[in-house]
Image (cartoon, rainbow, N blue to C red):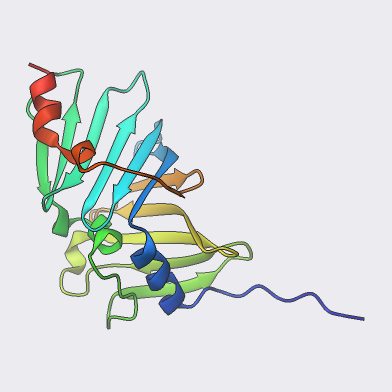
Length: 183
């Protein structure tokens, strides 16, 4: 009688290779904010360094990570975007040119919950920037969710649909054209 194969956590090298292999991708997402509110939309990635969150109505927000910064644009207010250095956010870990989860001090936890591998990572040089919990499924390896802890206890969860390879033009990350469109 054959026994079923027991699923195990995905090795860090395999996950690093998977993330490094993601060049351009898109997915639907559901975001659970620190205050419990829920938003949905579409995410676009163009690694390294580029990410875009387009929120569905009634939200009118747009978040673009590009050129070393994260821009948060509230289209309802027609105001200039808030800007933060990308390197000061845990998203910089998965958007890096070369993801290496075996870098000393980066991975704080690596576990398997019975259905997915969960990794808690942070910038080893700047733990004060917060951490990111990444959830991956196997066969094939796929990023399914992340939870960002901003370092002050606020957590934002992003649950992805199927993150699929897609043609994503560089122009999708042009914050100047988005700001200009509001004028």
